[in-house]
Length: 404
Image (cartoon, rainbow, N blue to C red; front, side, top):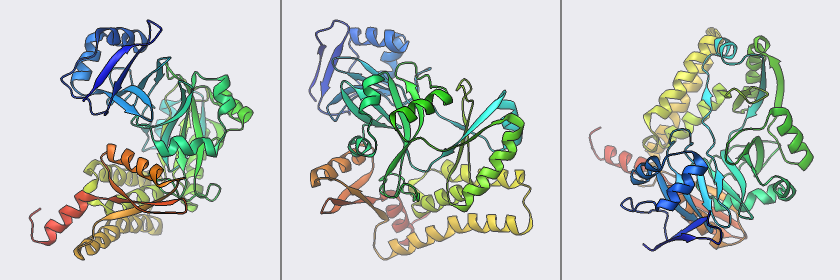
């Protein structure tokens, strides 16, 4: 593979070009690269070199963006962080992991000091949008540039003035809708595709803007925000969140994120029983393509939620039935499907301007390790077929007498 590393006109900047992001581990980072990165992200040269050798930092080249991608968290630098090169070195920090509470009552009182802001957690995929060397680029949670989202986000919302005035900020939000190619979920107010912003953060520091300042800025630039249910005192929040979750259950919505209004305390998330069931239903449709921790964590959430709500009788029976059906029915349907010599797969629909754009998105999925093809393209509508190969192969093996 050909790799070129050199300097731009400014002695502080550098660039590299590689034909593939699968850069072999036996190469080392040039000394001036490590020196510059040490200044920017606060990591020692030997930490950067060791992480690069282990594959935790890799060269990345996509959509005309040359970068270093942090595949794993390294000290205080989050996984998904991207160091993008060009006329300027742009640092797009990874989005921090939001921890989950299983019990509202003790946790909110212990975690927050004064007030709790409650925003909606929507069912989609996490996207960071930033101005990178003059271009608006959309990064997925892992730091990959999604060509589909990069094209669609500016169609959904006009970010031109925002980034003209605030190139140092990153928009953090959720891409949602029925034409979301990663997580499909219907929202009445969104339809096929939409975007909702939950954070504005500084590029280099990853410092989030306070809730008041964020919502004011989004209103100023006409950018869509997630729903704010309210700001409550800590004692009041326990009761209010419980009621909010019950209302979200009725409309099959996911849950809430609870935040310190000043964003000085890490946020927490809490999700509904219907969200757990939907995730289990999808996962057990392709049971051998998901790890056991995925299944286990969602069942554990159900147990603690039932306990805190003090459920019994008919309510507990409904929860148990919903949980069992989410596990058994989709798995049985897939076994029957594969028994007819068919593959376990799903069709995703996206609207693009050309077949080439659809193929580009498929290539992006393949870079993520997903087996996918463009099944059909007609009149701007592309059907992307995703194959769950592990589920197909394992079920086929067991149906033929293979041992578990």
